Image (cartoon, rainbow, N blue to C red; front, side, top):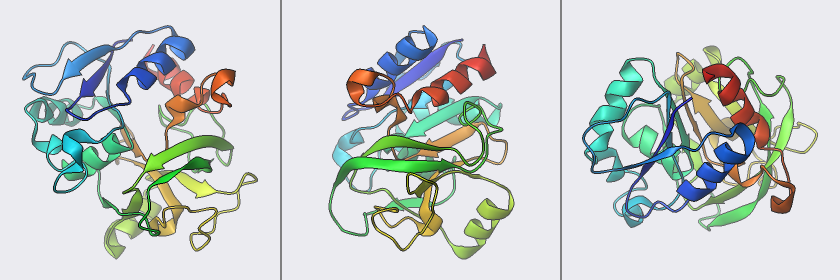
Amino acid sequence: MKIGIVVFPGTNRERDVVIAFEQVTGVTPVIVWHRETTLPSLDMIVLPGGFSYGDYLRCGAMAAHSPIMKEICDFANKGGYILGICNGFQILTEAKLLPGALLPNASLRFLSRDCHLKIERNDTAFTCGWNKGDVFKTATAHGDGNYFCDSETLRQLEAEGQIAFRYSSANGIVNPEDRQLNPNGSINAIAGIVSLNGRICGMMPHPEDMVNPLMGSEDGKPLFQGIMETLA
C-alpha cells in the first residue's frame, strides 16, 4: 500500500497523518510537495489539514490551483482513492472533486473541541472499519467547517448515499439545529461526504488525532484500518 500526502504552503497536519498511518497500518506515507507536476505510483492520496496559503481568498481556493492538482484530478478521474481532512476537504470542494462548499462556522468563531460522528454507510474504504450507525469521538479544529450545498445537491447526496459521517451525540442522536451536536452548523449535520464512486472522501474533523491512548482516544483507528484492508 502506497500513500502520498500532499503538502501546500501552510499545511500543518501532514505529520499527524504520517503518524496515524505508521501506528495503525505500519505504512510510512511519502510527502509530495504541491509544486510537483508528477505523482509517484500511489494507491491513495491524502490532503491533510492546515491553512494552505494562509486561507487567503477562501479556504482551499488557492491550493486548488497548485501545479500538483492537475495530477490529483487525473488520479481521481482514473478511480484513485483520495482522502481530504479539514483543509483537504476544503481543497477538494474548491477543485470540484466533491460537491458543496465549506462556509464560516455558524458561530463565526474558530472551533477546537471534541465531537462525535455517526457512520452513515460502511461500504467505503473510509468507513468499512465501522458498522453503519456506529459513533466515534474525534477532534475538530477549523474556522470554516460549515458544510453547505444547494437543495438539488443535498437531495442527490441523501438519495445516493454520499453522506459518510454526520455530527451526532455520543449515543447517535442527530439534530442539525443543536449547536452542541452540530457545532459548526453544517446542513443536515454533514461532517463528511464521498464521491459517487465512493473513492473520494472529504471530512472536517481529524480522525488522525485519535489513534493512540496518549491522544485521549483510539476512536479514529478504524478509518485507517479500513483503508489498509481495502488497499492491501
